[in-house]
Amino acid sequence: MKIVSNKFQNITVTIIFAWLIFFVLAPNLLVLAVSFLTRDSSDFYSLPLTISNYSRLFEPLYAQVVWNSLFMSAMATLVCLVIGYPFAFMMTKIKPKFRAILLFLVVLPFWTNSLIRIYGMKIFLGVKGIFNRVLLGIGIIDEPIRTLNTEVAVIIGLVYLLLPFMILPLYAAIEKLDNRLLEAAKDLGANGFQRFIKIILPMTMPGIIAGCLLVLLPAMGMFYVADLLGGAKVLLVGNIIKSEFLASRNWPFGSAISISLTVLMALLIFIYYKASKLMNKKMELE
Image: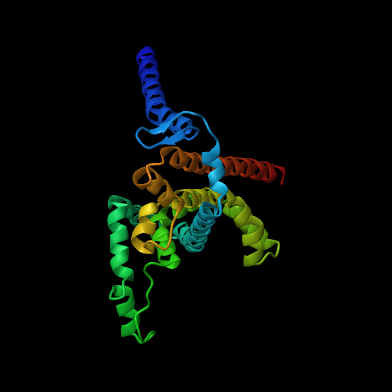
């Protein structure tokens, strides 16, 4: 029986590694190789090798797009954190049966294609949409607010899509809190704010960092959010990548942008790993 189990385990691991090699590693290596080639009008790319595709990233036009993309992604991440942290904290305090319902509602949007949901958000934020109708109906505004085709609309769309990715790691981190530490701090005279700053926040920091990474990194590549809610005025890094591959047919430059974004993701994940390691070591010493 043990031999059969070991064979099944080996076959499973082999299949997973083969899948990762052929469908994850190999495509990324191809993109990396293309990023050092030269644009060709007929074959998309050709020799000689060059690093000019990466140097173009520092041109003012593309540098501005990257900066705007980082800004909007960071704002969306901040909003998700401000909304998600209290929500996740509240989820850990309610009865388990209601907690399961809330968790189901958090993951329920994943059952619908994100593109369809963004079309729904476009209708919601339109001049004649539900958002403006409600504000006009209760008398808060006198004329419709034009939200579409602005950075605010893109940030709202990113928050709408990515909020569950913030809530779930925060919930996992907060649920592991040792209530005995909070009770001990309360007995020693610490108020609610002091308990939050000294105990809750440090102990849930891994969840905060994980949630921020899960929101920040995908947000920079969601080109369809910027296309539908931002119009031609607002661009994310993903819009430039899409344009270079499909419109300009400059595959080497599009590959260079993709690799740069991947490197940024890897760097942030490495920072998360180091921060988590230092946090755990600090907690052990204390």
